[in-house]
Amino acid sequence: MIEATGLTKHYGRTVAVDNLSFTVSEGKVTGFLGPNGAGKSTTMRMILGLDRPTAGDVRIDGQHYWDLHQPLRTVGALLDAKWVHPNRSARAHLRWLAAATKLPKRRIDEVLDLVGLTAVADKNAGGFSLGMSQRLGIAAALLGDPKVLLFDEPVNGLDPEGILWIRKFMHKLADEGRTVFVSSHLLSEMAQTAQDLVVIGRGKLIHQGTVDEFIAHATESTVLVRSPELEKLGEYLLAAGAGISDDGDALRVSGMDSPAIGELAAARQITLHELSPQVGSLEQAFIQLTGDSVEYRTVETGRLAPDVAASQEERA
Ligand SMILES: Nc1ncnc2c1ncn2[C@@H]1O[C@H](COP(=O)(O)OP(=O)(O)OP(=O)(O)O)[C@@H](O)[C@H]1O
Image (cartoon, rainbow, N blue to C red; front, top):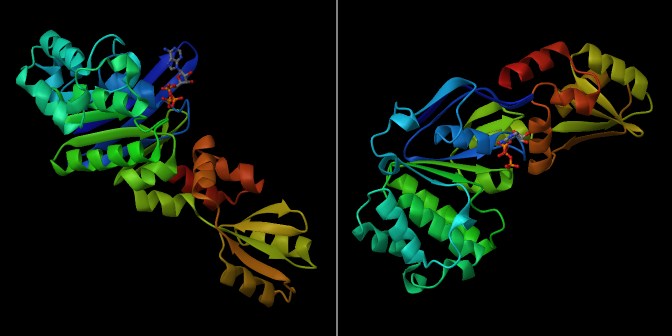
């Protein structure tokens, strides 16, 4: 289990991680989702004791990384797959790592087998494809048979086959009861890989919960409305608490569904020419959610009803 409490990291004036609290449970794949620059790598480095928090705290199974007796037996990480010496074979790399960290040699063949690299174990890692390098990085992370695993953007640049392999492998690790924490900037990828999500934007927590909850939240729909009395209708909608934005000769309405808009128009005897629910793309909605973690809806609607703003702030 990983527990972060009020975790904060400043680099000069840059607030990379801002008062972040979350929990990552064992037996599941938890996605760590946020756009580029959101603070994912910084958070992972703090979990691994590679960066000291400016404030707050993060613990692995109740302990700080630097207090762990044998860290690699507790937590394994894949941060950058390409750091292997290019003239070293996969086996030699793992042998060197095992010796440096006092892990048993017999584990080398086991992890090579686990990640499917046995056949190429004596070839120079410099000639490995990105997918093979990722496998070698995962083998290294597994050397100490740790209960907690961290992967930073493991599928970046991989072909579909490589992505599928990593996804299945993570599920296997989680099924063994391990804590698997994996970062990505792609919601579509995480939606297929993770059961739980920790979503951040600009270093702040936006959401912690199941993938389904987040997707329902992220794809919250708007309704496109056309009417010959658009201005009048807009005023009534705003008064009723909806958010509206101009969309050419139509209005885009948020915070109110089609039946409610139709009934409001009927009650005011306003003619409607169109009333169509719109569901945004998952990635678009995600970028919108994370781009501005508190007032993102004001960007879209221009005006935002106070109760909608309050509920969004609560959720953010
Ligand atoms: N060592 C550093 N010195 C100064 N600023 C840094 C340092 N490391 C990260 N930052 C800044 O902190 C913010 C968060 O960066 P971080 O790399 O943690 O984000 P990320 O979510 O992992 O993004 P990416 O996916 O692009 O790596 C960014 O604004 C980044 O420029």
